[in-house]
Length: 363
Image (tube, rainbow, N blue to C red):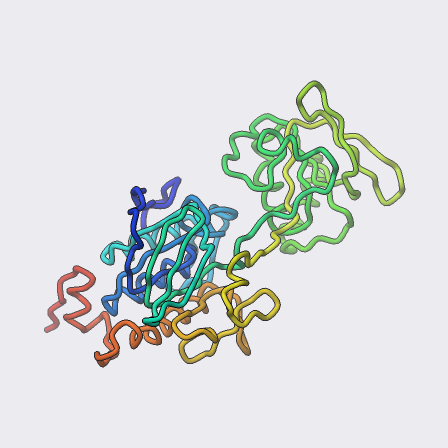
């Protein structure tokens, strides 16, 4: 496994060319499955451009859970979301994918020659033979705290994700939520912050039982507090958030002094413009077949958490499998006169050349 680094290996940002970029494959989404789609296409000598609405590669794994351990990647007993993104970026280096970050696909139109015209929110334009949607749950946004006026503190004292835990060192922290993210950060910040208070609307948590048990033990030790109730107001001191008002199940409203408020109510997935592409949408997911993971629009494929089919399991491992079959499914659109043969990276001299590695010699 690669040495752990603070940030994933990021592609060089280049000025977008003024004319449409012609490509064989366009991948929408730079999370783990989108990155592996680059690899599977690369093995078939198909180079890709990748678009993502986030400013960095890695998707939710890096944006929301960079330090959270992942245990179900084959041959890797444990890695973090950050490490997974770093390793995938290293794996796809031979294929020279071009990344267009911080922009969202706005327009997709079928051209008379069968290709697609694509325009992004930054007016980057493409003409592509195939599209691979690997957008996770879509354009995801944190569910916000519904207290009038409190959003004016967003980005200063109110946060919906943690980018730098050191920001909270020796501070009084209130964390709202009852899922894995809320519990994980409460446990991680206990030894960083001066105080941690976890606020949840009921004494029933959606987090891993081990995390809940550890939280309760820390409360018993008075290392942190857990308050059952809902935030329904706040008080400022000057321009700063100073106190929260929390009403408990007993009807009593208590005030909590704080320096920072972290809110983890989960994500609200939004398909955004993807919903207008004429695809078969089922409960905010894109229907695909299981032969090629192709949508109802020929030439557009969907892989990873954004797709749905009978028996679908939302696992990174499943997305990797889907990316492999989608690449083979797309090849006839790109090489209509070429027969695609199945080859193995262990023995194929052609794939070794594509990957830039030496063919091993066996006795």
